[in-house]
Amino acid sequence: MRVTAPALVAAALATGAAIPALGAGAAIGLQDDRMAATSAQDIPTRLEMLKATKTKISRVDLFWATAAPTRPANDRDHTDPAYDWSWADATLCGMVGSGIQPIVTVWNAPGWATGGARGIKGVVWNSKAPKKARDFADFMYALSKRYNGRTEIPGRGKCQVNFYEIWNEPNLQIYLYPQYKGKRPLAGRKYVQMANLATPQIKKANRRATVITGVTGPKGRSDRSGRGTLDWIRDLRRYGLRPGSDYSQHIYPSAPPLKKTKAFPAWDTLDEITDEVNRLRGGKRKRIYITEASYTTATTPYRKVKFTKRQQATYMKQIFRVPFVRSKRVRAVIWFNLQDNVNWPGGLLTDAGTKKPSYRSFQQMVRSKRPTGNLRVPRSVQRRVTQPAVPAG
Image (tube, rainbow, N blue to C red; front, top):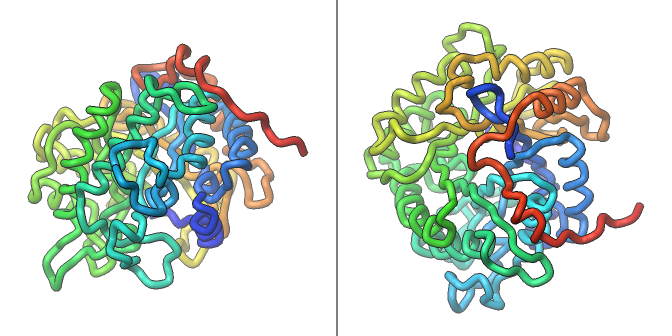
């Protein structure tokens, strides 16, 4: 589990606002969690910060509530006037035009999709599951249609985005509510419904699309706050997750990457997760993405473990020496995040913007690798994307 500063998310809600590989193993990428809380006109500034790291892949949160604040007359038509794509156009087309392939993680349902309910009290985003899984699937069709590389976007040209994650950490009640009905697990069934309906719709709109499901928060055991990692994957099997998607996991261990540990989940215990993924329908064919990982350099109310800045840089490199990460099955590891916030100091930059040693390590790792597979941004698409100028000053 990662924690984005509430003030950043609150601001976003108020405003509506060729991957280098490590040998045969995973690519390395980066998430800027402040992107989702940045207004459309200021996105170019954040993009410049991402580009400076040399990353070629970036995970990005896209709030369903931001793109569809009121219900469209036709949810599947991305040109419906109820949709507001200003933030998404600036962010996704801006990334593609910069040679960065986005992994788009869609969550935070609009109130109209949840019957006005918001889920967890005190959380600025909407953790309530949508009442109808079909509403989510229709939105995902409109989204992936707009950014399929063939659709002409006014003022932007054509923008090809190939990677879509279904929700963020849906095994945690803070992100998908409710997790239980009485003592019976409930969120897994709702999630499987959304994933099973959305996956074919995304691929119908973009035949090149990769859909990633699971998106599992790093929870060891199940309790009232959510489902443990292995229990969550078993829920996906129990409720019938269909083939056609890959699997993603989040890893924030308290142990160094190469250290033997009984802690779970950790780099040393990834095989246990994969064994459970293999039991899903088509599970052995699912590629693995680690779409959040980092080592934090200070304690917070949410995390008591901390490492030195030098250790952070060292452990970043060691991740890619883990045998499982070096396997062909693991496609990418996304470092969270670009810049510290008060709740999650795992960044390459401090909250004030000072570079940590891990910043240079990240750049060195990106430069040392070769482009691989369909994680690349096609050059033909890059040339067709129009970017706004970076604001002066």
